[in-house]
Structures are given as structure tokens and as C-alpha cells.
Image 1 (cartoon, rainbow, N blue to C red):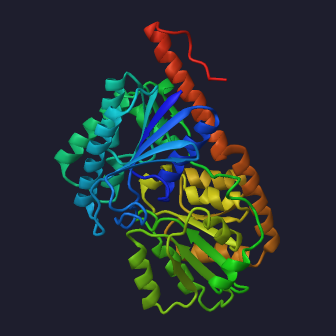
Image 2 (image 1 turned 30 degrees about the horizontal axis):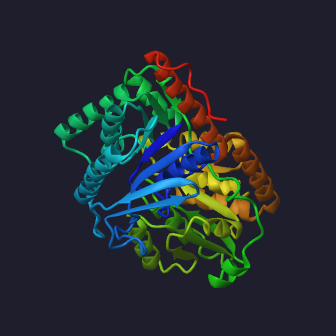
Image 3 (image 1 turned 90 degrees about the horizontal axis):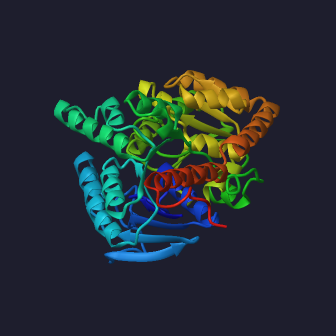
Length: 422
């Protein structure tokens, strides 16, 4: 197959979106398919284009066999909702032009968010006579409504119509969680058209290993008991709860909280830690993907959390799978699908969201019980390898794409059922 991914964010940018698409693309290349990615110049999360990519309008490169075409689009270091929308629309326009200049592909694959990428995917699929695959990582406009970002009823009505248009026109819809899959089906879409392929972890990169001496020395962790949070400081995560928990445990001088990443709520978390005069919390910048496993190897517990909002119950936290793959126990402060995974895998302790007292209690339980930490770590590693390996998930995607293309060709009576190239 020839597969075209259109996505605004792609490595070296990090996060759930870029990681998901890059893992899919890389494993499809390994399986013998031709893969192209049209993306922007890396600038997330600060809105500043990375060094080595500046001063260009277009760049073509090959990364691990993936053809990557980067296009210049609007960015701004002082991003707000309006500027973010402008950035998205500018990318959609430029990526459309670039995709029209490309050869024909069997599959046009877009992932939402960004929400308007679906328009590009549908338009290009019609122009190029390709299958349109719509991958949903986050429901929109539901998420914007849930967090108070989108309030205008007319805007909601328009976005709802666009959302249903995507669902109707896509040849196949891929949902990252069961909650999203059910939502799409409830919108009147045939169940056979909607499949769930969740996020997971690269179990080769994220794997149990000895603590990194370089990390321990560089960041002066010493022999502290490390409680780590490695991910986005997004509004829906509620990282303030970690700071409140650290305040409850500040008299236990062995426990150190290490928070890694960027996001809109990081400043608030840092300001609260400073206000409470906490010396048991360290904030670190976002780290390259290949360095994160070294931090996790030096940690004793990984925290994943979300606010107590109905919408977050259908989330599956990527960081949770990375902790589990590295063999460290998870303390999950969230409800819903993530909670089900931790309970089923016996890979950690679940506590109510936005409850620093219960979070502190779970941390102390694991702090005082090294054997429990070891067993939960082993359970988590085994579970992720079996059910949430990025390679296995990509293999499932490949089968679905082959079936979609095959179905289209059979329907048109052009060729017999499409089979994988040997």
C-alpha cells in the first residue's frame, strides 16, 4: 500500500499525537508499505520552530524509511485559542496544496485533533480517489465544551455538523478509546465502520533497566524515592493535585517529586510549589523521547492523573503505558477506562481524582512496600507487552487498512481483494 499521513505535529515534537502517528508510520514501513507524512516544521509546545528547521518554506527528509515533507505554517510563542485555530487553518491550507502535488496514495490518513484536518483528508481522498481514514484521539467539540473553551452555541452547532460530516464520509474511523468508539456509533454510524486501536508503548524503547547513573548525578537525585510525572501539564490533567500531595508529604525527606514536561498549567503548578515553599518538587523541561526511559528507570513510582470531569473517563493515558512498560508501578488518579486497565493488570493503585490525601496515601503504601512495587511493575510490563505494544497495534492497523482498500477495490470491480505485498 501507499499511505499518506497528514498531521500537523510529528517528531522531533513529542506527545501522544506525534508519537502515535510516527509509530504507525514506522511499523507500516517495516511491513513493506510506502509511507509519506505531510507535517509542519516542529514548533510544539512553545510555538517556536526548532533549530535546524528555521528559515525554510519547505523541507523533505527521510526518517526511518518514512518520507517526511515539512511545510511552513503560522506559529506564535504566545498561543491562545484564536491563534491556535489560525495555526491549524494555515496548516490545513498548505498541507492541502502539498498533498495535491503528491502522487496518488491508496490511503489518506488524518488524526484529530487538530479538528480541521478531517476536511483536508476528505478533500484529498476525493481528488486522489483514495480511502479516507479518520483517526480520533480526542472528541471535538466535546472536549472544548467540557473545559469551557467553547461556549458559543452557534459555533458548537457548526462544529457538530462538521464532526458528523467526517463520520459519514470516512471509509474507516479509528477510535483511540472505547468511549470514543461508542460515541461515534451513537451518532448513527455503522458499528462495523468504527474500530478501536488505542495508544500504547514502544516496549523496546520503554523497558525495565537499571537506574541511569548519569541522570542520578546530573539532577542530584541521590538515593531519594522518586515519584515521577512525565507528560503534559494540560488543563484536564489537574497537575495541581500533585503539588498539593507533595505538600502533605514534605516532612518525609526521602520522597522527591520529579515533574517533566510542558503545558498551559505548568506555570500554575510551579507558582503553587513556590508559594508552599516546597523543596521536595523538581520541575524539568520536556525531554527528548530517547531520554524519557532513562528518567523512568530512575523512578520508583509513576503518576498519571486527570480532573474529575465526565469527559476524562474515556481517556487512556499514554504516560501510564510507558510507566508500565518500564516496570514501575502506577498511581492513577482518574476514573474510567484508564482505571479499568490498572485494575485488570494489577499494575498499580487507583485513587479518586483531585484528591491529594488519597494520592499521598497510595504513594506511602508503595514507599513502605518494595515487594509490592516490584510485583506491580512486573504485572504492568507483562500486560503492556501482551495488549498495548505499539508494534502489535500498528500490525492491527495494517490489517484494517488492507481490508479497507480491498473493500474499495472489490466494490469498484477494478481488482480482486487487495493483498499485502510480499
